[in-house]
Length: 56
Image (cartoon, rainbow, N blue to C red; front, side):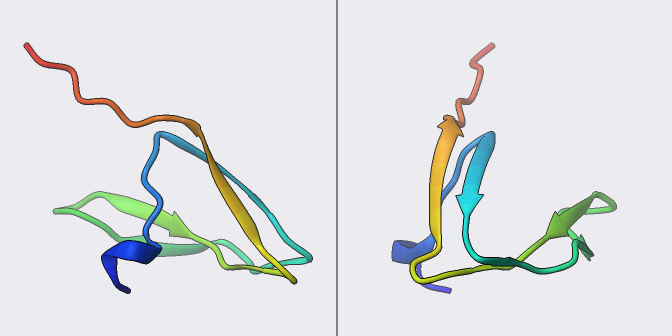
């Protein structure tokens, strides 16, 4: 997937006509993530809560 097609955020809302079953995938190290696919004409995704890095 190219960088132009990536949406990053803490919370993302997706709207579409069809949603796949959640699938457990390996993420970083021993962490796991859930992957779903949303299809539609068009499928829409928007960032509800932006991702921010806390500086210490």
